[in-house]
Image 1 (cartoon, rainbow, N blue to C red):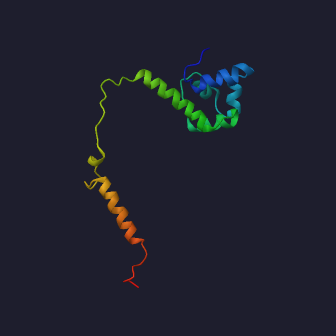
Image 2: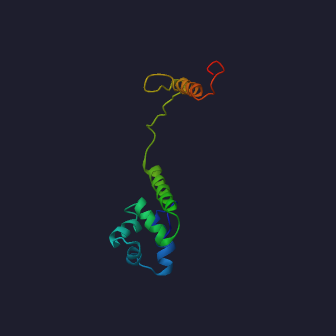
Image 3: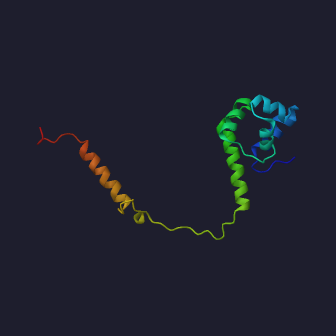
Length: 130
């Protein structure tokens, strides 16, 4: 079975861990503490790897939980690129000076004002104030 590029984590588990070592999905499910049907949905690509499953796979098979989630994310994005049509999507043109905060003020000047007020509050006492 040829893997997709990038592979679904289920394909990867089958081809790297289970098939070469003669391990069944039921055996792995038992070791991971999940039902055979839950793991089967991952192995067949019908379900993705959740954060909880990533933790279980990490402990049971190795690799970090982040790597399992990254593999799932990479596969999902690959699938979306094949499926989603972007021809009707237009880019919104927004310049930095046009961005406003909730009060309608220019964000940049608001940030500058806050920085200046903060510097004034935390500066050393002036010679007059002593």
